[in-house]
Image (cartoon, rainbow, N blue to C red):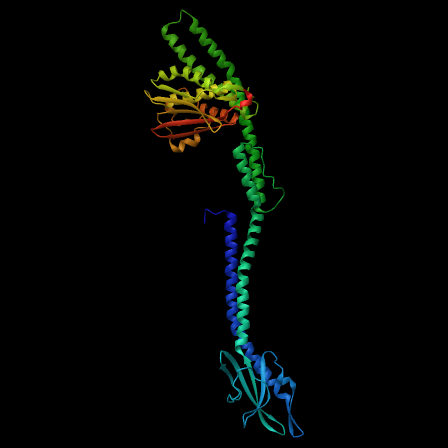
Length: 455
């Protein structure tokens, strides 16, 4: 039940409750109606018989019968008998009813004739100038029950239609009631997919809980967007402010290293400082690039590039870096793959992937870099046999400054994979990772190939 949507659950609940109520009401109605119909037949029979004794008179030496006795009113048959001879004097009886049924004054009896049951009421009454007569009333129970069964069948036939109409009305009502919720959900999904905090639900004015929720959600988005804009501006400002002192520090280190009177110990210390400053400068450069990308101010210098040749050059340049950790770098590059991209960013993408593999790879291990064409896309891959990534860390590795194992990160800033993901998306591609602890990781980036007409 929990896997069903709220709309479906509301429709099922509404339909189920309505069905139970309808079935309960029909059950009570038919149970009461069955007794009520039989009681109504009895009352009608008694009332008709007691009223019809006035329709018999004795005048001028002969019995006079009103024609009303022959009328089939409310399904009641009337007939007049002589009690002495049991002779039928006037009236009519239902088809198949016994004419010689013994009289029983004032007693309401149930008589069965063939497959039909009847209520029979005999009433002996005096006629002035003639003597006693017997007025017999007969009403068919089966006819009343037949009408009742027809009504029952009609109700059973209409019940599914009532349930279907109830379900339809429940669906329309729930869809209308939950429409704003679906709109809120779509807005949240679009914000997540497009990373655009400027979108709003904008349900308009309303006083119910859902409209209040939408207005609260829009207010929350306003606050988040304002905080996000401040954070982006702060990141950009900090990166700008750090570039100049870092550049000065790096220049001073290079100037010191050029001096011939520098002692070996001092030279080693300056080299350490220089290396750290270069690392910080690289981090600031990447942070500034990501900041400009967040603000939509980063412009790509797109050109047709031979990605195969670019990948081979990057692999050859990075092989010595891997060798310093006794890691073997293998290349499997398919020739002739062209993309429309920013060359600087693609080089940075390869560098970040390979540096990440070296950082978290094992000494004496192996790194495989490959480039293949698949379904009209260039597939870049870097695989290592290092420590791997825990399943709970996989969704977080693309976050800025996140490091699954800070003790192994060395000079890594935690921005490399964030850059990889942004570069891939900026070129209309995507980045993904597969990894198991202790078995290494496989990073894959897909980029669209350049159309042939661009050659």
